[in-house]
Image (tube, rainbow, N blue to C red; front, top):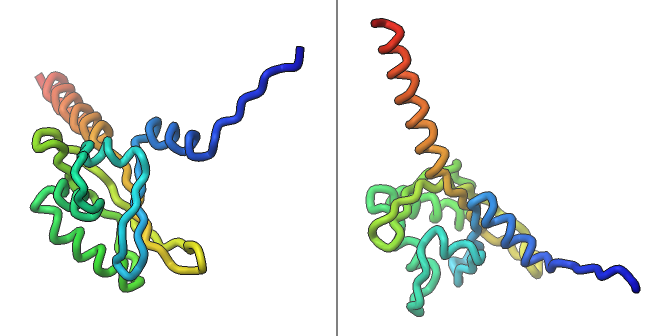
Length: 146
């Protein structure tokens, strides 16, 4: 009996990687056209069955204090200027807040068009761990002084 082989599609493998490393992506043309995002984007911005365009749904989740700077970065990006990496807070379903790093890139798309790419990484757990470690270090220093 021949050995059974199975092959995963590249989109399935990409979804597994996105889930494992808490990453997602958004891509859109330089002319500001429709945004397209990865499957894992629902984790970042929450599932929304509305028919709102992705751009509106995404920007709605960005914390109000972070939104203006992000909009400025997106404006630079569409004018072919790469902004620096940025951290923003995303408010999911109005109650959960995620700390997300966004990296901006230009990539070659079909027909040699330049597309804008946002790479998102959830760093909430990393930030939480760093805070806990700092608290532990402070307590340890206090204990060693007494």
